Length: 169
Image 1 (tube, rainbow, N blue to C red):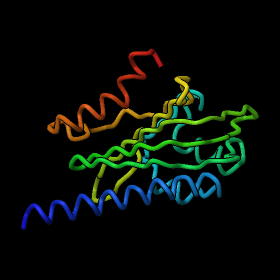
Image 2: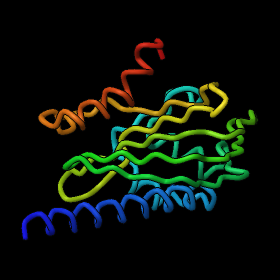
Image 3: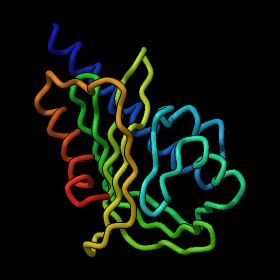
Image 4: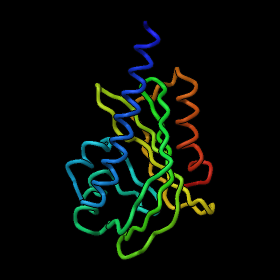
């Protein structure tokens, strides 16, 4: 009985995170500040090529049109849940305009979510061109460990933010 309850909870979390991923895409296209604010963690910081924007600046750029999504589609979505941490991977095709600069191509994305106080939020996002060129790395330094006791979660956390740090970005 416990196993089926745990499996059911994991399925519900996976469903919810897939929905958050879809809401993120729609919110970018629609310039929906309220949805972005709900999904993105308060201490989420955007790095290259978004020049270190914090959550408030990113949302401001989206709503003002400084960051405009011309096209974005997502496929091959997969979610893995590790307790209170989860990793969503997908393949995106996107064209963005950021302060007049076009960023476009096919990208493999990794988003790390964490549950805090009963709410799931996006804490890390990394996108890498399928041709090997990096589009963007978006990350944060979480104020508290993300399930450090869970070695799988720690590996997911280290993979997502450690790679960028090793490359000096």
